[in-house]
Amino acid sequence: MPADDLADSATRAILDAAVVEFEQHGFRRVALDDVARRAGVSRTTIYRRFAGRDELVAAVIDRENAVLFANIADELKSRRPQSNYYVEAFTLSIMRFRQHRVLTRMLADEPGLMLELAHQHWDAAVGRMAGALRVIFPDGFAEQIGAEAIDELADTILRYAAMVLLLPARQSLVDAEDIRAFATAHFLPSLPAALRAVPV
Figure 1 (cartoon, rainbow, N blue to C red):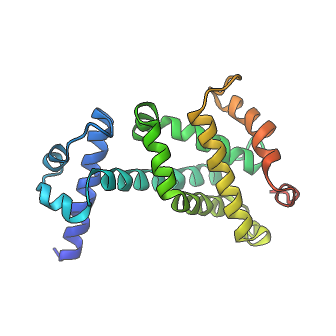
Figure 2: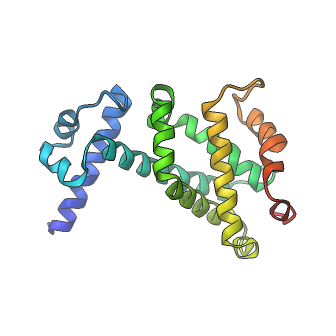
């Protein structure tokens, strides 16, 4: 096997092992020795790829978010939205995030870590959300509203999602209908008028 393939294989094994360890023990309590043992690699191998536990945590979250956003895009593309695309993208993002075993664990155990990682990786998260939006929009819509509007929409979705996921609410935000109602009442009006004026 070529060296590059071996490196990719080892990195995937490390990330897969870390996901299991994080799910079982939480993000702050995981020892890199346990990740190495589960991945079948040495601790040195982990340090060749990641500067430490914080960088490994960030890599896991980055990978899990990328998969999550891709799945959201696929799901929205394959079904008829119950409301407009903006509201539906927001609603599904919240619902799927809450169902994700590792991200939910981080939210419950380490909300401060989530905010810290958001500060460090916000641009990447906006980029992934913007990419998901480009997939779910009807043909030609992304070009019609332009890259800046898509990035602004992605940024707004993530900010309101953080609000729903991290802060208490006076109204019920449990099921998809609750989230849709919140998105319609609060998230949608927050979008620039020019963006809301373009039908999706």
